[in-house]
Image 1 (tube, helix red, strand yellow):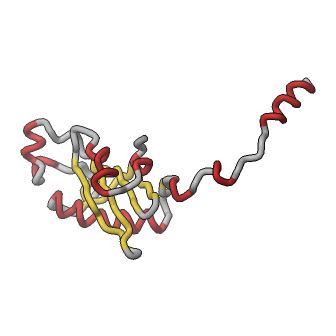
Image 2 (cartoon, rainbow, N blue to C red; image 1 turned 30 degrees about the horizontal axis):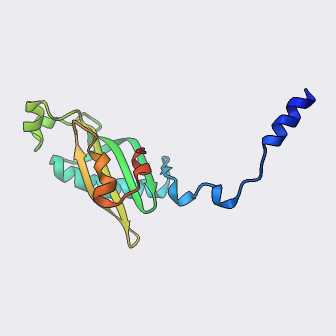
Image 3 (cartoon, rainbow, N blue to C red; image 1 turned 120 degrees about the vertical axis):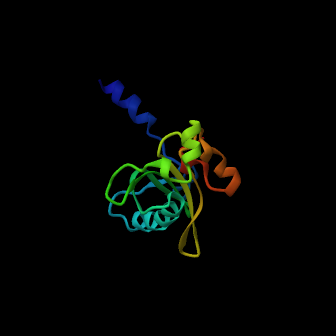
Length: 147
């Protein structure tokens, strides 16, 4: 037993500060009640309401920030909590053609001068549209869970 402890103790090597993770490179999932979460959803809500032509609220699947960027994966609902009828939105043709892959919305937001703005969003994509956002906008790939 003593040899095992000694072997394990020898594995505990000091770590150079440069080897520690850079916290600015880490993304942060926002919990319910965090002020930034509310601010982001308040910025996104009117944009999506305009796009869908009706007031909305969200079920949040992912809401994450990193280095002045935010990524949201939300599912919109009517103001009363019901499902959105996409046949009554500007996405009706996509729905009819089978190229609206569910109600999921993915959005990219950026903090500019202390204010969050929506840079891009996609409704019901049939592919991983946001995979191109790091190249298109300069947002960190880790924000989206991409390598």
